Image (cartoon, rainbow, N blue to C red; front, side):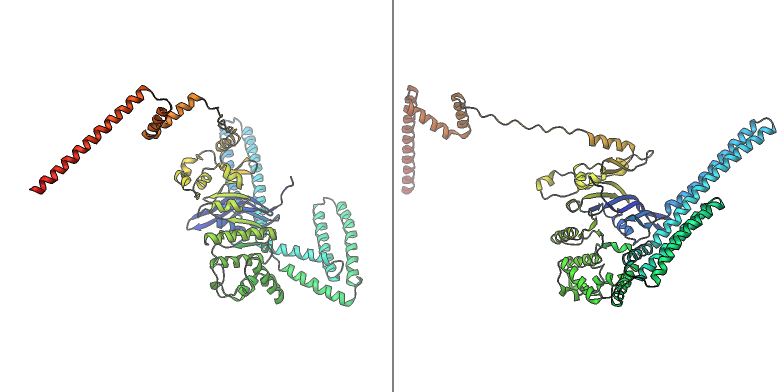
Length: 572
């Protein structure tokens, strides 16, 4: 299986905010990688640090600690960990020196002669010097890391622009003398810097002379090429040369204004708050192109209409203001603004939480379509796990600024390991009234679920691609739980059809007769009497006839009695 390309790498990200004398650890030691072309879901309850993570990645916040790499270039760096390391190194040195001094004093008390005392002093003085040298080396290393982190954080866009300009020079070097000249000048500067560094490392004068001869040949070759370019020895007609020169200058100017952060764009949670109410849709979407350095108005309008069509709007909407649109249309405008610069990474910060359910589905389908058409990589921030499962390839769960679980979407829903993840999954409602009546919420209490008094937790890989924030005891339990063989599902045997038997049929009929009531029983008796008359049947019939006669006689007597009563009343 081919290794996937890592587009964004977040390493030990920390984002702290000062609150008087205390600090709020909004994001604390978060690490993950996002691969090119995937949708990475970041979920958690409100206030867990999801949005802060996205804003820190795109440099809306200056991060406190850690590093963020985009295409292997560090675009954000914090210094807290390095400064804390320097402080710990100095404090450790002081503690070690105090311990060595106490040991030295104890040994001096038991020493007999002055020579022994002097030997002890010399021994511990040497140990202290060794400790100080080791601490000095560590402090210098960390100080250099602090300088490098500050430089990368401040000048990452400038260095990226220089790299783009060098790429333009190399592209036009064989056709434009000015491009070739600039490229040769850069190469000459690099050769001189390399020679000076090599001479500083040289130990003897002979080595320095050898280096001078070696680099003088290289420099003379480059200088001859530069002189040939300056004299205009590249053959081209005047018109062609002017057109190429103009094209080269425009390309180099745009490369100089390019920023690595242009490759990352953000879709904000509240569409109306993220759009300027005094700007038309055309101005809002085209703002990124203008900042990028593009001056051609026809080209700008063409790109605006193109992205409007991509997000499901029409060119007539370009002249309107944000308040003239619905919530879903405003979010489409925000998406159009994000994709007009052809980014590689989109950070979608809860883009559907402020929309209706039907509009949410439309926006999700739009993002999915744009992802396939433009080859986008998406960091999808949300708290609706059902939506994240549908849309994301991998999911990371955050709680109180920490990443507690990270795995694929299917694996997270099939085998959730962290108690907080299970609590989140138990809160998902389903459109099934029978299931909802039986659904039980799992409450997560970190003080009850974990014991981190001695063994502190860290993000560990429980299975390939499945990371959980746990200590060693929990790690072993999770591994055992995943490796536990599942019991095979035993299916009930199919019912065997039996041939009807006379006795079983009679019993079945009698049971049915009892269950159906007296009417069925009477019908059965009549059928049996017709089929085979017997003495008991005759007696039963005679008794029934006598009973009917008695009943009719009694009814006649009652009728005559009632008639007599009526006659007596009339006479009275």
